[in-house]
Length: 314
Image (cartoon, rainbow, N blue to C red; front, side, top):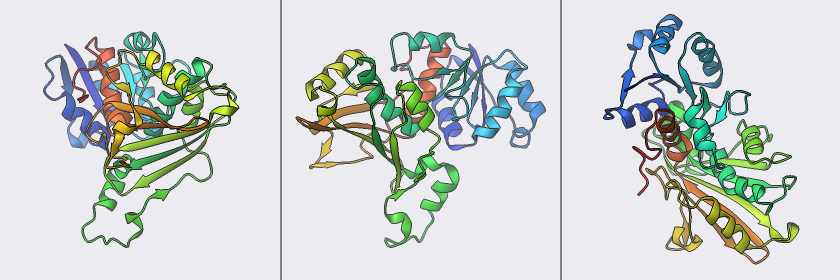
């Protein structure tokens, strides 16, 4: 049995992960009383007793937590963005490339991918690896997410009783206009791009779900829509999590809903348009493959379980 400590178990990701593993008979969870959850001494002792420590903390707190973990023999799975491009850390995306799942199985330090970044990378990385998109391409992406990705404070704000249809939260809210979003470094590195994409994240007035789109002018790359689909089919063959599908299968009475995959841990990817201009689309749950689902997938690998154990993939 693997002993597990979730540092930050009362946050959005921590709570979801704890709920997911509560009935597991292969994991023993160490839990601290609320009064001790900020105590470095209590957390250090918990880490010493844990085979794996999962960090569900803000970035700065995660960096400090790793300093504690370094004093122990615990392995670390970090759900923050603090270590996603750090040397010595494995980027926790099993579908990224052949052999990545095995790296996660063996790793002492694994970083869970960001929610926005996951869709972009899983759309683009196989195409770059196959030479369909050049590494120095100028790319852009838009990501529409449910408000739950903003954590407890944003959830409480959106779910305040008495809101009207005319308040500002009723409409999509673009942000990160300065092109310094914290997911950009991992998007660039994991997709093996020379330069970061121009990126526009947007928060929507719905709880869960994520829709990432990447527009491509295929004439710039001398490729075709069929080539894109072929690369995806080969790269994701056998994956229980990432599934290339026909774009039309994603439509609900002609509409593409960003919350289509809410409550699920898988991702659906598709390409629309053509023949020259296409739109790459990824649909998933920002709290599923974009957060706790991705963390659970990595945790399964780190503890020798089936990677899909406990995931909602139907």
